Image 1 (cartoon, one colour):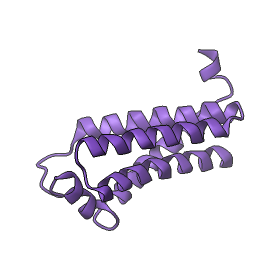
Image 2: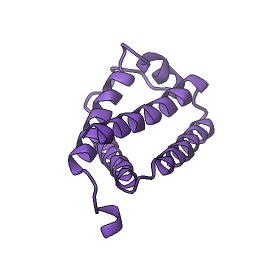
Image 3: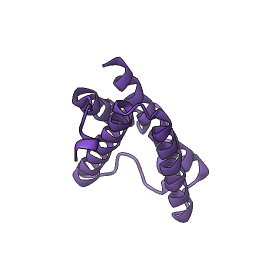
Image 4: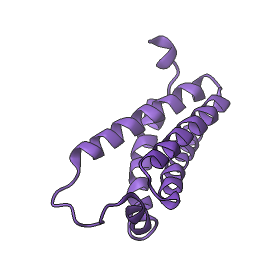
Length: 128
């Protein structure tokens, strides 16, 4: 466990996850990519009767784990590992969207959010 906890800046990990989560709210909002993304994945924005709590909890936990990954690689001075992981997971997410027959716009929007989140996490690691 020491190799994934030693030297990690936990404040940067938590802040990176929270800021990335909030960026997602803006990213998928009607002000940015939300309406066309929703059309591309086959959902209607603003029709949910309640907040998708399970999806939101999964999102914040996933972002926290991703931010921890960024923190571990930052502590080890291995930025290229983060870039490699980001490319791999972005392409896996993109291919998943292809299997679900999401529009190209929706796939690129999701890919862009993942890359944006990692960039936010790297910047926060560098600042703190």
